[in-house]
Amino acid sequence: MKRTTLSLFAGAAALAAVTGFAAVSAPGDTGAETAEPAARLPVERTSLLCPAPSASDLAETTYTSFTPVTEGAEKKGSATLTAAADGAAAEAGKGGEDAGSGKDGEDAKDGEEGKDGNDGKDGKPVLRPGAPGTPVTGTASGADAPALTGTAEGSHAPGWTVQQTTEVAAGTGRGLLGLNCTAPDTEFWFPGASTASGRTDYVHLTNPDDSAAVVDIELYGKDGVLKSTVGEGVTVPPGGGESLLLSTLTDVEQTDVTVHVNVRSGRLGAAVQALDDKTGGDWLTAAADPAGELVVPGIPADATAVRLMLFTPGGSDADLKVRLASPSGAITPAGHETVHVKAGMTTGVDLGEVTRGEAGSLVLTPTSGSVPVVAAVRVVRGKGGEQESAFIPASDPVGARATAAENRAKGTTLSVTAPDRTAKVEVTASAGTEGGTTATKTFTIEGGTTQNVEVPVPAGLKGTYALTVETVSGGPVYAARTLTGEDEDVASFTVQPLPDDRGTVSVPKAEQNLSVLQQPPA
Image (tube, rainbow, N blue to C red; front, side, top):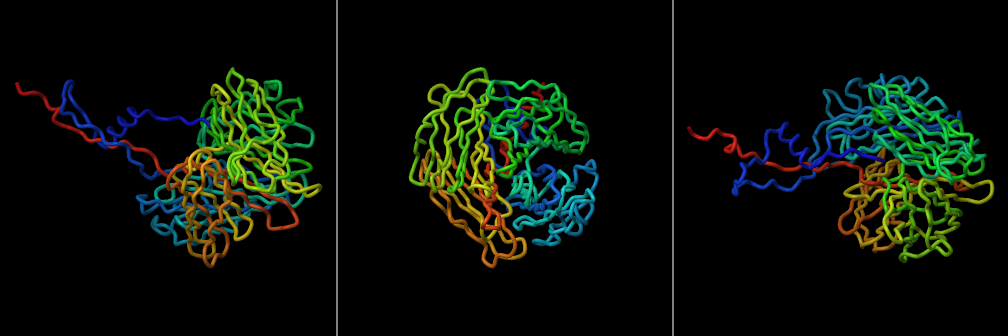
């Protein structure tokens, strides 16, 4: 993904324009004050976008919304999730203008009216977010559940997370499909898609704004660009969503395809739904921005097949060292010590049962000369007719804090990786959606290892809960949550990496010396 950033100078100037406080000095003034270091402050507004969950009539979807309690955040706030299918015209749930809040804009009580019971078939939202610290859920059934656009403000904004989990009982793409709803952006990379026979992959685009967005969709296979004019200049209507089948964008069948979504105007949420006739399906979310070093966290210990897909968008080939961070340290997969990635071409490598029954994360580093690369893995669990698949893209670090919503008393695995230096992390389990009290544990992750930590479970848990991971010291650390289906006879699962929740933003501190603005005496 590509994010627009503001320079420190421009940010300070903008802050000065709003607040009237800035450090100002005359030329040659040796007594000028020095601006204080930047402070981390809670964000005041956050947007999230959820794609339409499924085209299957057998789909059962659960949405879980959670905002961690953030020190220094505003006391009041609200959140809304709106159906994109009808142009984002409807409010979420009951509560009108202050959906997600109590009367007069005050926060709802923990869990109050969190579950709407709307199945989504009327085109309206199904989830009403509640007060920070307690997750709330909503449900939708069948193929008519819409894409959602959401905005949180004030106390609801810092670290707001919405998890979308869909269970499909049978057919193409059966199993458990999950993703964290994403913030709007202008560029996305999806290594791991496919146009091969037996795969049905869609790219989902959701527009949160009141003006149309225009996007180009580029496909890259093993030999380079897959020619297509259909993916150029795709228009996504205001407040609406579009779903495009990849095989309609090109007539070339390829096992490994990288999808590049580049927004010409506006901004979008984007995700790829990858459905397989034999191994079920899941969401492929955007990989971390192209970089020379990458971490793919949280490969399940019982993975029966792991396929690594890589792409370099620049004009130079990349040579990468492949390591597996295991519980005992970094190891090199036999026969896959390095991988060569040709410029502009998608490379796929079968790593087999690389984890061999232990927790693991892939760590990719350049053998010489850093060339930006994007990467993801496709993971298969189970054997024979009970195989299920999921995708894990290369991820950004946890940073200050990251969150996984919708965790269950059974079937939740939290994997934490410290690829370089030893790190200490604090893991907090929220109250449950229907009852329970918070619990916290601290873990030390040795450098070069991956640990499946023993997650805390809320005392008296009823319903599902959220897990928040915070970096206490050392690092960087990477994390991923695996959620498995409730049927123990089926290997259904989904994996979500946990990058920083962007709950705080760096704001430069400044003071204004008004004396230098005065006119000198006549």
